Image (cartoon, rainbow, N blue to C red; front, top):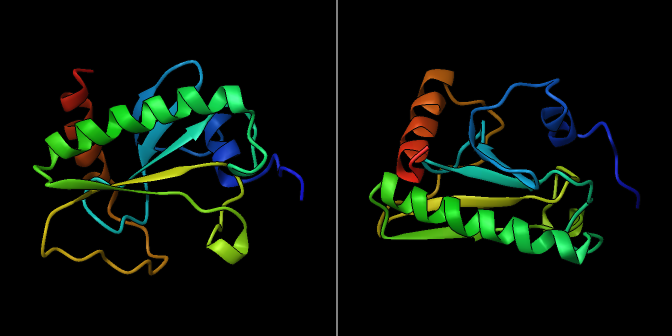
Length: 140
């Protein structure tokens, strides 16, 4: 299957849809998931078009994973998490619903379950506050 230039993450990259930005460099963008399964749930995407990991340019993956690591460390610090769950899905059979390569970064603590993915968007003020906490941990 081909890359759809009108997917929601492509629209975010073009500035057509707003996001709660956490971190950005020339190759990647990290922002809050609007339907978080945990406080601090973020998405990290490449700026280059890629449907998923299976068709991504291998040279772009290094920069992408470096950003995943950086924001995961900041999320752990910002939310006092004991660990960080990193998720990445490829194609519908594996659970992918947005067809632009992305990693989920979720701060985790023992005994605290993930919220179900209900399709309901979180409060913007809460997301803005979470983004600010992560940016502070990044020193941004």
